[in-house]
Length: 344
Image (cartoon, rainbow, N blue to C red):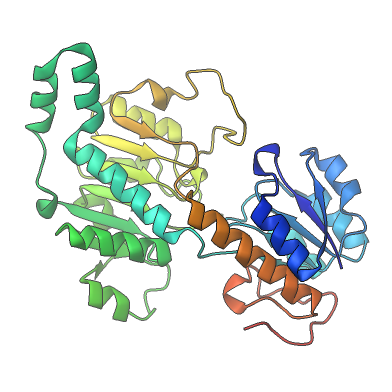
């Protein structure tokens, strides 16, 4: 089984990944170019294409289908850069590593909440500038954490871990989910109130996004949603950039409708580069934002877990097995080459 491993230059193979490939005797060829036509040529004879941050549009998937490819293995969670619908049409299975960074994402969300609750950036700038009264004035408007409400849009694994941390601070936690009939045992055990999107927006002091990017969720936080948010509330996005209308968010922050925004994922920026000329975005010019370049998922342990889970998917595919059910992104696909079972 030949695996073509696509990677932006900032996601080179680590020693850990190389060791895992060698341990399992996998035939993996790295390919660094991010030009779709070059990628299409590189994947023409691949059985599986593995990717971290490289886009795989329709013509790349079609090139795979013209050969013997049976699967796309995403090392990571989001698959919005992959034409999953086209892969499904061709019977190409798409799998991912969905759970590798749920703790890191929850920590990042809480770090952003604490930043705004304690006005740390304001205090830092005030100390730097010698304007100490500015820090005291900002903190005087704070509410105690245990008097604040966190609203989670989506209640998947990262949201559950975020809720657990927020409840530890005594926060009231509300959440939405796409399936209202889903089991509520975990939410009930944590004291999370399941409700609708409108209530989360109207009531929450902090709103955090925990949903994948789909046609249904794109721009779920648009101008109308921002207008429904509680005055002075803070929006946090560590999920996918295009969940938020960034221009509308900028206006809401400038107008004073919102108290702040913590943004880690971007629809307007290609953050998979080493340098961007400042200001990267209008949001970076504001004092009531805290921004990071898609690093909410990062830790030494998360990187190792992602690689191990990705290699496990490759090993299953080589054995003729469908990867574990929780990793399958398009379960509706009818595999173009039958699998002889499913990995556990």
